[in-house]
Image (cartoon, one colour):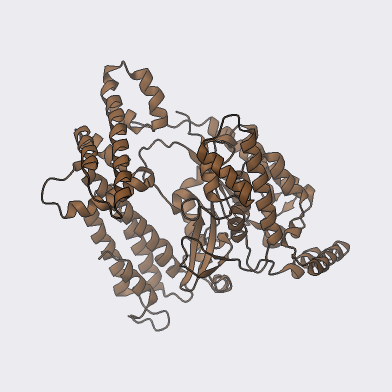
Length: 593
């Protein structure tokens, strides 16, 4: 079968190198792919592009901004006197263009620590204009929710994550968007992904500005009043690319999959980098200095993200920056080259256009093969979208009739369960079992007359992290633990799968946020490096499908792996065991109790 459509865009950060992105928009529009995109995630320069494209901007509008707006003007002060000085120095740089770095210094020095308000204003105004125009052109009447979202944008004069989430369901040119930021909390830095789930009412222009705040070039934006913040607190933020420069949702927010057959694929764009030495398994003096300046574990995060991206190689396009016209992959030649000529911009855009077209052509000639033990297994593996039209064709086939009926009855029972959960939430702050819930679960249990169907139903309840079903499973785990009689097999299996997913999430967090950063701490002894690498391998083996461990066995294996580090981790200064080690204390707190 053909590869699934591209339904997700992932746009990496790269400063001024982001002007090349117009090239991929051209290719996707020409090939009719843009309307299939449902979600765009971006970091830094990629966040700016993501915000504009998610608001429905077409290639012509995007290219206009990329080519015609002087990038350096987006760093201007809002103070007229200061802005006049900044522009005067930029003009001086033009006269001194023959001197190495003269233009760069004259552009940047008077603008260092920019608040970036012209950038934020541009994103806000362009996003509003594009979104409202797309909604006006939409041929079908919009639902009440969509009309309310349009009214919100017209009233507020900015676009929120929630507005995009609602409108993207009806207007194909509008997408949901996710944008990264690096939060500078007192206890340390943390990746924050602004989205409709976390920050529904946040202005996407503010989020894009935060994500694109290159250290030193921009001052640190601050934020308050968001759902993840304590009341009355203010949090400083830095460039989203510091902790995750290529934000792939499947990596930072993996969801339970129903099938080996994917519904869609991402297109991931990363910028071409200069040749560098093979990755070191530990930190260096230079990397430690960079981390200290950024006040974040940038080196460890970059190494981790690079490793996580490897399985996505066939879904990744490298943005060409080293061409016959020059090398634009460096810091000075690319990232902070805000005075890049229109000719250079168009050249980089054309190179990316060709690279993405090659990727699309190769996808179109690639076939995927999936094998199943039976027709039933194959039909169960299909998504609802693919299953429904096929079920109509196969309805008269006796070999398929049973599984078709099973899926339809399942959909009815799940709908009844969801309605029961929502009804229970209206009458109580704590979810308790009701007769309506028990009736729906009984129906699901009757349908689970074979192991394959039982497994499928358990996955279905976990699929997509549906908030109603997640609430139900978390409550059911408590109900079942204290039950004296028989409990639902479907519920029991679904709760077990939820626990396994939670263990996987905890493993991911321990490795990404504790063990991997510990590898890159300056002065780390060889014994600690060896210990950490061994424990990371052990944790990866915990969820090996061949091991077939249940959730209790996995929790024990997880705790034992962490205990190895706790018992053997040594001080970087003395080489002795250090009971006061922050790493050991953190791991102790992350063990299952």
